[in-house]
Image (cartoon, rainbow, N blue to C red; front, side, top):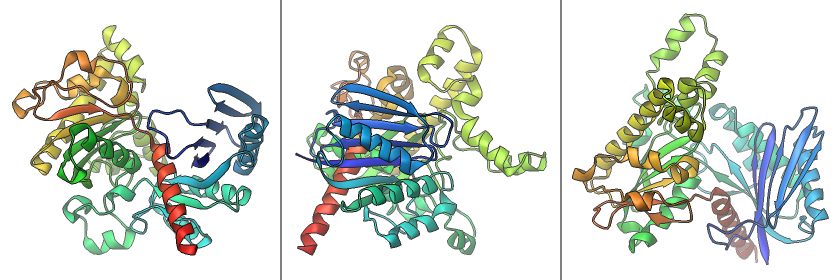
Length: 404
């Protein structure tokens, strides 16, 4: 059996999976792992191999050491890179700018092009590059493929993609709506036509990726026509720690009141959203606080739902006809009360939730709307790692065929 290795490198962590790219969306990977606290006094490596959990706490000075240690630990259990056949390494890269619209075979030139996009994603792309460079050094004979979060939204119509900013300034600085979570939105939206018994080009749908980060997308015939995130992942829905859409004048006001740009950045990205309003960003804890009568938690939840309903409504108008609304990611898949409240009272628009179906535990793709609901509502678990593995493997195979 052949496998793909998927890497998601952060500033102080590396998430990875070794999986069969032909596996089902709910199949467990051969290996999943996390290297964290890179550069701190004590780092940690956690692996799950065939269901067995292995942990190790050691100093991890840098990404190179972390990945080598993880591979060594995998080898001890017979699943290291030399123990199994790896056909491709897929790298999650957050921002592809206007340059990358599809997965790209990584070369030195491609790395430099990704590096040129750092101003658009200063928190993410540098870490993604670190992971790419380390993995290429350790696994030089395997094709490495970059898969971009923004790729799915590359061809959005100009009316949705462009901001009403001076055109010359926007062009000079690359200002436009790029969108994020594209791998998830694409993966989930590709499951829906089969659930409806239709071909992809027949289906208009709204996908809702609701995790700690959250985004919505309107998709017509398999192509995104709008999405909630923008130049950065800060825009759109209220999120776990991000504010979502706000009046941009707030930034100027806070700056004039003496807050630095860095402190405003930290406020809006890490200290706002549900956490900023209630003190927590875990929806299980939020639900408990609401049940205990906490008014801040109740207010945070209402603001979250209000913004979510605004995007659902606007996308229904943009699409004209909606065949399906789909929830995915941690909150979308597991918080039945969020799904219920997001679509409450919309019977006149042909949306009817079945309470029994909605209350079932998360166990693969399923319909949660009634049989009479004109717009079908689904819960579809996302699997971004599988999507990246599939894209990386397919591109590597095409490149190998063209060389042959």
